Length: 168
Image (tube, rainbow, N blue to C red; front, side, top):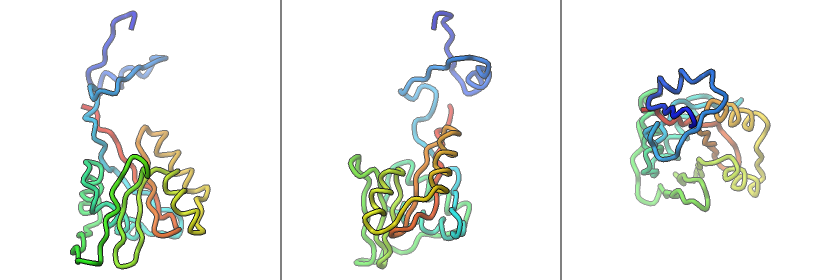
């Protein structure tokens, strides 16, 4: 700040690789401010297709830019079309700041996606647990500067969604 240097592009931020300190604001000056789903990371014993289908279902009622980007990623990368929303067979669980998760109940399947601690708080009372593989995946995504969302069905964690904020 003493040198009055301001990075106004992603390229400028990349060039700042030799800097000791880089300060970023939270006003959306550098990024678009809406994270986009970039990849899915299945845990052992879960196929990418199973995770994609559960992720799609858990995101159908999510009207946020992140939720819409998750649906778009699954459609584009896996070719999975959303099911028809039959009356009485589909209950949307909306995202709230208190729960920090969202999802659906679809034909008896309880699907949720959200922050690691929120998903843990949801599955543990059901007899589930979050193992070290899930924690490692969440930490790996976070180390890359992305946002991890954990996907669970019932008391079982299926994988992690990676959300990236796009640099302008």
